[in-house]
Image (tube, rainbow, N blue to C red; front, side, top):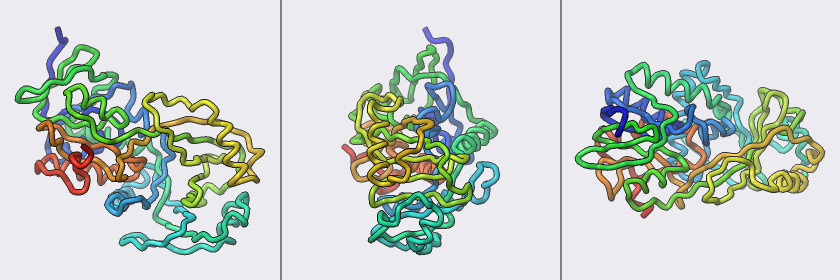
Length: 355
């Protein structure tokens, strides 16, 4: 027996950036939603464990457009979400112009003046692009912006409620491990690395999306100005930024695993030491203060999944955000809400392409 039955217009599974931004935009359109989250807090997994970087660069032009659209909105609420437009410096082998994005070339000497621990010999044959509109966002305050506004517009957030059963019979019935039953005409899957797990409860065939584990580290006492741009080397795949007098660092590793355990992988500290010794040897004696891991769920074509399922009616996906979930969250939620309201699937994000 279930404790109670709660009805709404839309059920959203997952209270990370995908789920809360979609809920926020639906609420702005007058569509009532209930967000179900299995953890005790929103954004417990990837949404709350990222580096907080807004980088307007992606492998797909469509994703870059959503990043820039989101950035333009974040600028209007910068103080509320602690958006610091410190800019970015990327090391790359290509230069691409993008509308609404101002970019400038930096010399290797300028790069070294900002990050004196980078040896000049590692900067040869690279182009350095400074993007002043990139920056750092406090993930928690951005999530709170969506949560607070969604609730003020009449939405409901149910925490610590893991979905264990889903059935469809002229409408959805979603049951949680707390024996609560939720009913709605529409169901949105915004469960991040667990998106295919939610789909399996219906059941419908999974999408060809996979979660990859990535590690982040805090290196103690490395001197980078608090206002310095964050640095991303796309040639050898690493990034870093200031973290209150220390250095937040990632070697952009991608570990494919079916075990969605966010504890750091075995031997990862040895891999970090080897990587730094090779790419940033002046930091080889730095002390590791903290390490953690999160998941980036990606599609084979590196594009998002936003749209209606082609097997099951009234089932909508917002998934495979590939590490851009925070940066592009405003535009992702806006696009998803509009597609739900108009019953459309925005190309090229349709789920059917991944079956």
